[in-house]
Amino acid sequence: MTTEAIPREQRPYDPADLSGLAFWSTTAAERERTFAELRAERPVSWHRPVANGLFEDPNDQGFWAVVRHEHVVEVTRRHDDFLSGEGIVFESMPQELLDAGQGFIAMDPPRHTRVRRLLASAFTPRQMRRIEDRITANSARIVDAVADEPEFDLVARVSALVPMHNICDMVGVPDEHRRTIAHEAQFAGGWRDETLLDGADPLTRLLEAAGTMREVCFALLAERRAAPVAERPDDLLTALVAAEIDGERLSDDEIVSFFGLLMVAGNDTTRQAISHGTRLLTEHPDQADWLREDLDARLPTAVEEVLRVSTPIMTFRRTAARDCELAGQRLTAGDKVVLFYASANADPAVFADPLRFDVARSPNHHLAFGGGGIHHCLGLQLARRQLLATFRELLTRLPDLEVVGEPRLGTGNFFHAVTRMTVRHGRGGRGMRIAHDESRCAATGICESLAPDVFEVGEDGWLVVLETEPAEHRRAAVAEACAACPTGALVLEG
Image 1 (cartoon, one colour):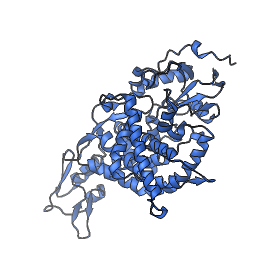
Image 2 (cartoon, one colour):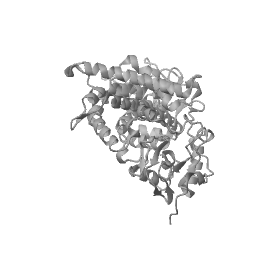
Image 3 (cartoon, helix red, strand yellow):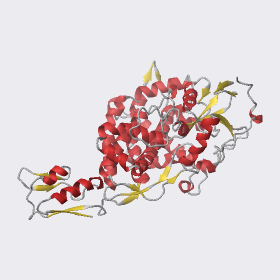
Image 4 (cartoon, one colour):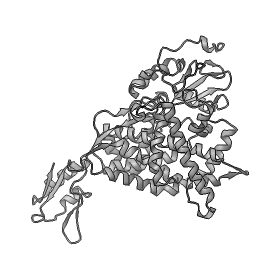
C-alpha cells in the first residue's frame, strides 16, 4: 500500500552514491555492482543532487533513480506523467540552453508532436538509402587509412571519423566545415574533460561551441533558401527546409536545434559504440572468429549486443508533471526522475547472464535507444548501418586488432565516453609473411584446397599467392597449406 509522498526536503537520501564524481569516474563494471544492489532492493530510490554540475541550482534537492528495465520503459511511455521539457540531463538548465543543446527531445506534446512530425517527414528511409553507399565507402576509406599503421588511436582515427563523415554527408555539410563541427560537438558531453577544455571555463566553452554550430547551420540554411528549388542539393537540410504538413513548416531555429542534436547525439552514440565494441571484440576473440564465419547473418545480432553492453547514452532525465506513483513510491510534481539505461541493460529479469558479452544473444530487448513511446529515436537505423559497415571493415581488414593498455574513459554521467584507446595490429610488417619459391612450385593445388582465400592456381597453371601477408586469423589454415606443399615451395615466416 502506498503512503503519502514525503516532501523533498524531508526525504532521506539513499546510501548508494550515484551523484558524486567518484562514482562516474569508475568503470562500468564497478558501477554495475551498485546498480545490481539497487535493482534487487531499491529499484526507485531518492538521491542527492548531482555533484560537479554545470549550473548551481539552490532549488535542486535531488532525483529519483530508476534502475530496472521494466520501470525505465514505464516512465518513458508515461509521457503525460513524466516530462522531457524540463531537460534530459541531471542538471537544471536555462530554457534557451535546452532549446539550443537538447532540441526536440527536450520537448513535450503538443510542441514535440508538431516538430517530430515535420522532422520525420524529412528524416525518411529514402534519406537512409541515399547515403547507404556512402556509409559503406566511408568506413572502408577510414579503415584503409590506418591499415598499414601498426599502432594508432582508434577513437581519433576511426570512431570519431565514421559518424562525422556519415552525418555530414546526409545533412549536407561541406568538407571545409566538418572538422570544426566535429570538434565543437565534443563539448556537449565533454565539458568535464580537462584535456579537451585546455583551461577554458566549461560553461563559456560550451556556449561557444553551440554558437559555432548554429552559425554554420544558419549559413547552410541561407544558401539553400537563396537557391532555386531545382538547384538545391539533395540532402537532409534541403528536405528539412521543404518539409510541410498541413501548411506548417519548420522554423530555422527548429532546424538548427535538430542539426545540433544530430551533430552531438548522432556523433557520440556511434562513436562510443565503435570504441566499446572494438574493445569487446578484441577481448573475446572466439566471438569475433565466430562472426567472421558468416558476417552477413551474424553481424546484425552482434551490433545489438554491442549496443546493450556499451550503452553509449547512460542516463536520461524526466520530470514528474504531477503527483504520481512509480514502483510503490510516491513522487511529487517537479521531482527529477533519472532513467539509468546502463542498469536496465544489465537487468537479469530481462537478460540471461547479463554480464556476459554474447554476440549471438537473441532476443535482445536493450534500451540503448531509449524505452520507446513518443520519444522513439529517429536516428537508430542510421546508427545501426554505420556500426554494421565499420565492424565489417575492422573484422575483415584488421582481424588481429588488439587494445594496448587501458582506454581513457570520460567521467560524465550522460555519454559512456571513450576519449582515447590505443590499438595495434599485425599489418605493416608486424605479421606473418608467405615466401613463395616459384622455381620449386609444382602448382598441385593442395595449398588452394586448404586456404582458398590465400592461394589460387590460375588458368595458366601457375600458383598465385593472393595475400603474401595474410591476416592473423588465417594463420592455422596458411600454416597447414605451407606445410602440405610437396615441393617445399611455400614457407610461412613470422
